[in-house]
Length: 205
Image 1 (tube, rainbow, N blue to C red):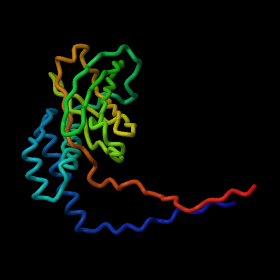
Image 2: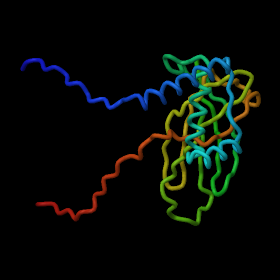
Image 3: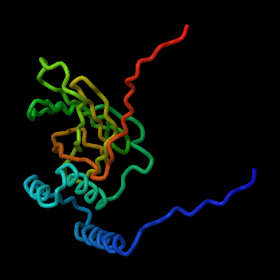
Image 4: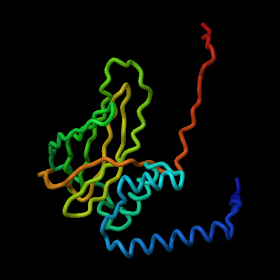
């Protein structure tokens, strides 16, 4: 079999998108230079105003602000969190509406920490509440700038567990930092494709 040349993918990019993208890049560069490595985030009230003004979800605005702030500081973990050094208990919880949120512990690694969040539906009398979609990101405020990334999630039946990768490592005394959860969801993320299997199936002997 011989080699075949790759066909060029049709690109419909034009001056309209070029103008918008160039303005975005200019503003990103300007914001990064002004921030000088510090994190700046709008209040919840400002996000709600922007939600109405621009028809954009607060969680999507939270995602954008998180990306802007992460781009302001250095990147700490080019090769992962490194060796596990210990475990620090956090045990901080809060209840909002019908859900309890608990930060249970932090796995202390050489270059970063993995923080675990438990989310529990507290109305135990309801049998089926559907699938929980936590559009949330952990915020860590301390003496230094912390970079936070989602590290995975799992669960079902009213219980969900999430983990976050924090760098550099958290202090062993977690009272030195403040934790919070902010709305967070990529604005252009498409929902997963669903394939429904609902046909009657018979097996041959």
